[in-house]
Image (cartoon, rainbow, N blue to C red; front, side, top):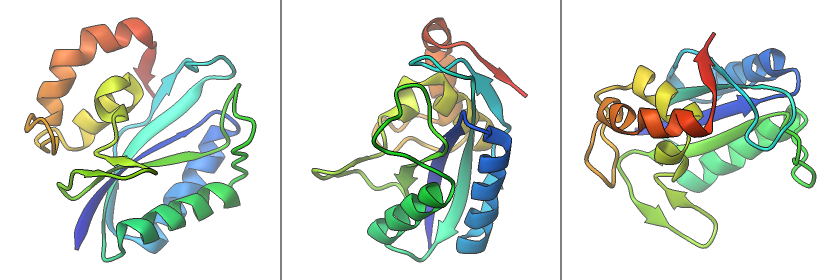
Length: 159
């Protein structure tokens, strides 16, 4: 079994879409747990976002997980061609076990883990003693190190 970490966000009917996504994740994976939910101002304008991080166990391959996440997004109204003001549902694969992978399509662990408060803060809440695969630093330590600078760029609060 592989542990996966996922970042979820929405700013179009976000409570409904995120709950739909969580229901689908519970049906698709084992040992699903979620961080507290956070609200933030959109980085590129538009309505506020709701965000959370989810941990789960899977026997699926990385590619099968990515395909499944895209299907869940699509079922919840994701429009990939026009997201300037928001997103119906975004589910990002943040980590797949402790693997460090770089392909033409993606890099794991995802850079969002350390670059955005709406990812790192929920991650630090969900798995504070989890270790970032590249830095070897716990998510709690990363949040404490980066909190001040990340919150200058993005207003974020727990809900």
